Image 1 (cartoon, rainbow, N blue to C red):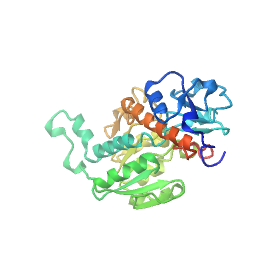
Image 2 (image 1 turned 90 degrees about the vertical axis):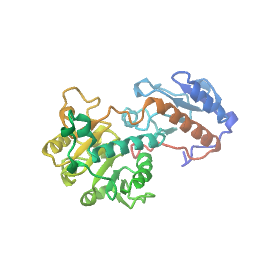
Image 3 (image 1 turned 60 degrees about the horizontal axis):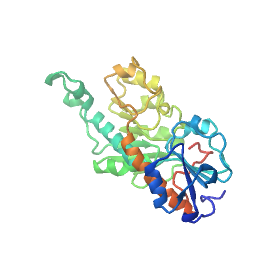
Image 4 (image 1 turned 60 degrees about the vertical axis):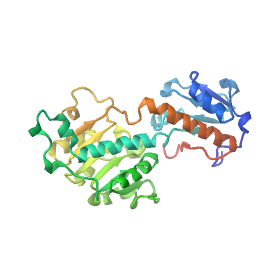
Length: 316
């Protein structure tokens, strides 16, 4: 298979199956892009709407040359061996970037502006002290993972006067970032980092990307935001750092374990803000997925590179 999606199939000849069940919105965008809906056995492409890899067909028809998945994070699909190298697979990576980036900015601002203390206060006097209230203006925010979410955050952070230091796999320049660093040089960013947002994909190489050493290297005024996957942060090390006060706080939309069990130390930690994996709410997910499907159907028909193409060698 070359770098593109494969040989072009005219839009009116492209047969697309939507599984595991009918989906009116996706049917509309597929036919709107000029393709036709077909049974799985007669399709050239499969739009899969299920989130559990265990439900995916064990065998696909030979003529299926492209599979679109509904998720941005597909580590479970890769680890289970669902994704093969015989056909093109695309994830929803980047499709939900704006929504998740907005949530990440909200979490970061909440921490920096000492909102958690105010929310928990029971009287005017017990609200957060003025000394705990900071600003993003002039701050350097390190964004770990400069993919769709990270790139979407850059103009948002720029709008509130923050500088962005981007970290990606190879250190390739990221538009809008004041500096880009390869992940192998991660230890160089901590002396100049005020706050950090974790938005990298989950792979074996990124597990515990933020551990005890990284948490210790951050400033006691730093906030850590994680909107990627819980395993990218060492939860035990984070609990220790929060208890010791070596970190101002952590705002997490994802945790390890997830769901975070009742009674977990993070629930009792006043420096922790936890949202239950809602940065990409279901009410917005369907619209964003439909937009991605429409774009990729059009690209597939034209033989152009598909968005969110899975690279098995990279793990995402």
